[in-house]
Image (tube, rainbow, N blue to C red; front, side, top):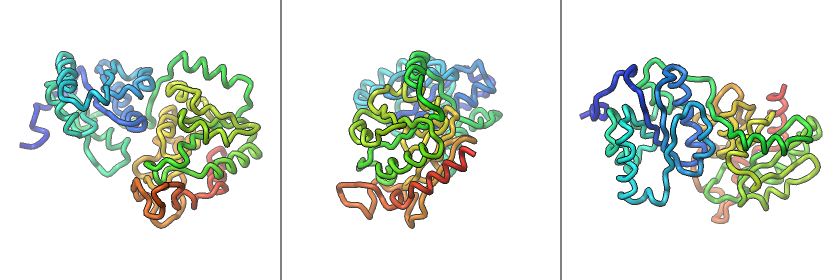
Length: 337
């Protein structure tokens, strides 16, 4: 029996309520916002619910195209009892369609026990991840059209706090999100802090304004080395929602392949991705304001978690170290023109 025959396919005009399951990191959740945005533009009365890990609930909670969010406990979710408990809650919602965008045994079991009219797993179409999510939704809502951007809302309290922080600083506003410079599990996604420092000098000299460095509390110590006149380090000082608010105010965001990169693109600000091991075909910032740059190193876009050229201590991979600050600055010049 074909996968599509497990449940009757409801007529899209009769679909009143859907659930989207996407458990994972920040960028994974942000990519999926193409689905509620596209559906609501065509079917504004369709209820769109989400299951998300608690780390990203706040960020996604102010999206006007999402009607309800269930928080998933990652640790408890390893046990069948928790999966069964959550499925009973979902069964009471009587979903017409559940989009299982993880395709794991756990999320399939969760979907199956929730008894929707139809379960739709994520399909692989060889497109970007955003486009794959959209096409998956289009298998049910055949007449929806792909939006030209992703969409996130902004928490009003977070926005007010950020407006207070930005007050008095000179525009244009740049946001740099360097990530963890020596992170071992993200080989090929991190750029040298020395390069970030050189780039900030070029940007301030030629454009003036203010550069805000954002990141997690674990990155605060290494990001502090970037602090200078015109560079304000906020790493560890902002919540995820507040980081989203400051990204939304930027004239340009420059980032490696990290969650903030995709948050910025969802706010439709000019966003430049510095790519090494991950391919722009899959994860480039979505929309007309999304840009990317990479080196010409021989094995870029390898998608390896460990680089064959690096030792166990990790470090900056050749595909990223071959991307020089002047190349990035010239790209910035072209974007701002």
